[in-house]
Amino acid sequence: MLKIVLLVIGILIALLGTIMVFDARSLTKKLFSFGDQNEATSGMKIMGFFLAIIGALLIYFNI
Image (spheres, helix red, strand yellow):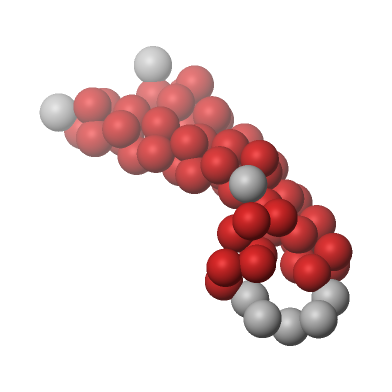
């Protein structure tokens, strides 16, 4: 049962990270209202990349 829960959590984290990488520009327009959106977009892409790696590692080491 714990393996299934960790697998689902890993899938959700990897999915969230992938969405953050691909939709970073539109997400920063919705969430933040400061002037330098390029910096916020690159920060969100980096954070999404790390989340995708963490989720993939959680899936990999769970099996």
